Image 1 (tube, rainbow, N blue to C red):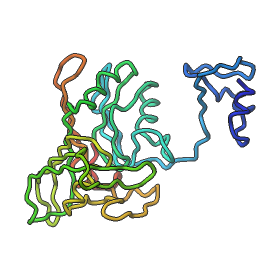
Image 2 (image 1 turned 30 degrees about the vertical axis):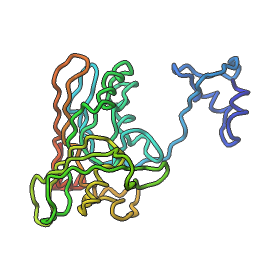
Image 3 (image 1 turned 90 degrees about the vertical axis):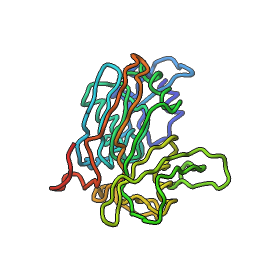
Length: 281
């Protein structure tokens, strides 16, 4: 296995050092040894060196925990899963360590800059039943967004169109005349001067769906760094949270049939976490 790793990996990877410090492991966590027989069709994992990450401010609150699922109320700027420049500062990595749950995994995703409720499975064996809910659209998700008030906009309205997100592109786009794959019910809940709180009920879950649908109505969400225009933001700038909140989750538990309803403690407007008047969950 040592010879195979040296052949497979680029020269800058210190294969000898990684083997000596047990940084290469098999699926079950057992260290890969230099003289292990070569094993075809085998996954080998290693922990890459990580840069220091600026801690994301705000509480990552566990609002429900049982044998099968965990529901957290996440702050803006905290990634759901480790990726790119956000590894330690992700819900999965932080909670696996804090709760001692090495198999903890998300059952759906929230954008890094979106706040609110996230549902996770405690172990792999529970993923299947709960993921089927999201695949079949039986989870009732409610979001709230702060966006400009338009007196000429007739609400409620259901936006239906086709959204395409190309891998590697920052923004998604609406494709005219393509089959509908994204649908959102949009209602106004309250008015705050020139802004309003909108209640959003998505019936599909496309990338950036809610942000695009409000932008398409001429009421882009406050604090959005992509719509209507791309706004360059430093990775450690937490001063302007996106005013989009995953505020409610409701479903019938697929294992025991019980009704489940969860509500975020956060409210709009979302202030920078740590500011004197910010609402802490």
